[in-house]
Image (cartoon, rainbow, N blue to C red):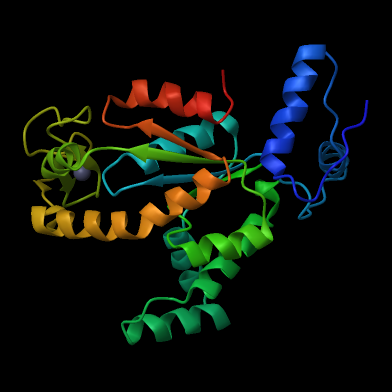
Length: 263
Ligand SMILES: [Zn+2]
């Protein structure tokens, strides 16, 4: 049985149909990408073709997106990539790109979308992304999403939704060790054993100015203004899954794992 590909059919829709038919009939669903992927795995080569499980994680600052993304990364054995980490790594490496980044930051300008998308796409082509990857907090804008779409297929977008009040509550309890940088939270699961003291090194715990309420409100507003159009963009593509992230980590995590295909 061969399922023809129609150019006007969205890839994710087609994949869903194929895999449902495969399940109903109890016959394997063999895709050319799957075969190419398996062949490349054998040879240990890397290629743009070998991307099958590609995820984007969206979520406001404080929604727990990073924690969920790194959990899924461990479970699926695929890397979790954030643009901030990549830029920091480039700056460390030095070279042409690092010089450009420095110029923008010295002038207090935002790094242009094309540059960000370019480094993300370079990163995705690396060998450890062969079985898939998680983009943590990228794209942030529609133009980044459109540029990304031209380079790579995204299978699912996980949107961790937490109401503003819960985020304020979480952020207000957040404190960081002055000595070792460990993060604790007096109102959530990561409570220090004794108030104001780091469990790991005994250093003093301080609140980050970043987490002051006004800053949190600003960041949330910026986030919502930027992300609302992204939610629409990925909803239209049929790949967005919204998950209630106001619950405990473990409950949220069950839904997240289901959404990325872990049963
Ligand atoms: Zn410490």
